[in-house]
Image (cartoon, rainbow, N blue to C red; front, top):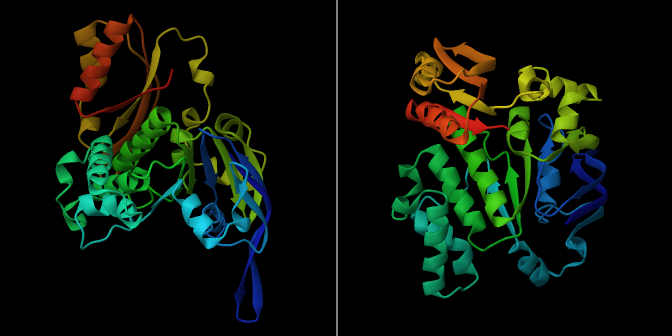
Length: 334
């Protein structure tokens, strides 16, 4: 879907020429979730802004579905951008407009009929679980709700491509997980290609199919997330993953298991409850704890645990429902 060839971008800083991108070659397939990760100043924000020509390249080409963005007239570029949604770290909502009007804004600009606008906006607000917030203003919403509204706005014109510029960096860990799960659902159910940039490897491992590591304007490593995490080749990649728990980026612990493997995500409240013991007692299942990473942050336990739940599908689901009822977020791994 996306082909990037020989992409370079330089900026002038006084008398100095600064190279932000130094020859990027990359292909992103339709329907995948592709992550671009790097430290601050690596060039990732510049790169993603070139995918909708918010930045023009100094040298090189960006093609989407065979269309070279550099060859488009202003009118043709506006048409192309209707196929590209974008969400940002700080939401970029209009404070003077209701959530309904914020989501409707791209359609209003395109002079979409009012009845169609209402239908599409209400559909998007329902999708992001904000159906009851359409008359609220951004100041009345939490950070996670603001990002959900921004996602609805990005999707309301039915784009083929969604760009995420550090979309979870301003959110707390639990809200980050919720937003990433929403993006996975959107990708799965709507088939939208998602390209996201981040400096957090945990975001990449949660959501992405493939990843490219950018360092000082150069792609230094690229591949399937599992392969890059298990066999990092470059020092910058090793640096980015060195603080992740080992179970996050390897599935060696899953080999030979016959039960359902589930990751449990705890917050400060649920980490204080004996939820695994409760599930064992109520279901009679011999739940196997594979790994646990519960950290004390400001005297509060926050983290995750990977478990194996044996038994049939009904019994496994009963255990999962017990975890959910206790405020534990569950993620089925295999």
